Image 1 (cartoon, rainbow, N blue to C red):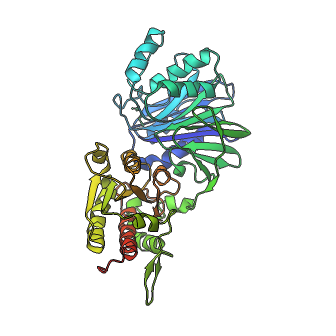
Image 2 (image 1 turned 180 degrees about the horizontal axis):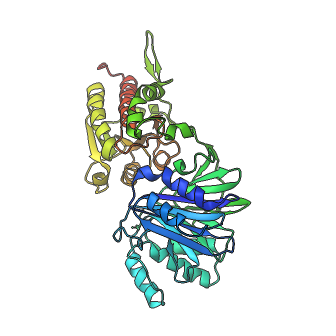
Image 3 (image 1 turned 90 degrees about the horizontal axis):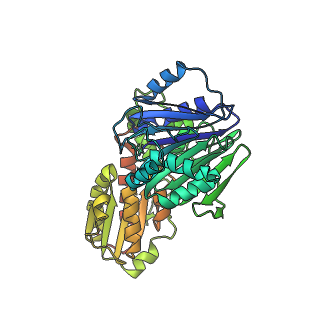
Length: 434
Ligand code: GLU
């Protein structure tokens, strides 16, 4: 799952899109591409295997593409090798629809076969391309782009964040989310959508996070948010708490080095307002609902579930929780937990940990634990991310944006957060082990 950037507004789209792709480059990718609706209302697209620099070079070698609506993508291949043809955007047969997609389409083979029988020709090996052909079919039947995306949703199984443009509606950008993150950016002279707000932070700090099952449709003067079942919804506009300096290298050779040196500041932020010192030390975690009612109903075990670095933080958390609480603590890889062998019930406190809050396996683990009656407490870094919205309550690590791919400051902040949580739980349980 990699990056999406989309723009509609008054500025030239291409430089904004390419710059946005560079901002999400840190996520890793194997190819990159863009599509712009030019000022004559035609779709122009270019995609290249390799670095964004390769795409930029190819763009320099062709005529300028004036246009103020576009979509862009960095791909991390799941279906089909990394090459130019498999890179996104994917176009419909008539070249009138362009789609970028993060995620996987599970029933793409049967949908592809069906589309072939209807006369569609495929140019890539990806699961994604089927979306462009499906949308082309619905538009040909007279649907507008919003309805076409909703009908597409009804036949597709899998996970996606998508951004779509079409020459049939040259003043429209549609994005939809079903399992892969999407955030909208509201700038003064246009609108952005991206898988990660880093892509457009320099243009705005006003964002709307889409939930699964939601979509947005933009024209140049406004936007609407709907469910994929066509219900109109109102969502609040949130303000990003971090600024551009935090996602710049700031003179360091690379991000990881910068983030290692940020750790003293980060830990102060993680601890800020959470400890009262003096005679009677107390931990204040906040979180809504607070932990007290859960403990009142009694817990007899703790389950920590996460992936990768966060899972490693969980292993340290286990030591602290067991020592301070005296309860058994299991640390489970979120992808393993999904298989359903680990016991979890109303007497289990589940702790889910993720830097981004978008780790799919961890989100699924949180949902499963919640469905089993367990109270789910999240420890996340990204404010408003998906995990924070599916968990019952939780705390932010306040580590700021982490760009370096080997996690450093976010990991340290997770460990400190787990220490605070352990102390709080011990305090609430009246543990004498502190
Ligand atoms: N499944 C799609 C592909 O392989 C999208 C991968 C991604 O999220 O980058 O092309």
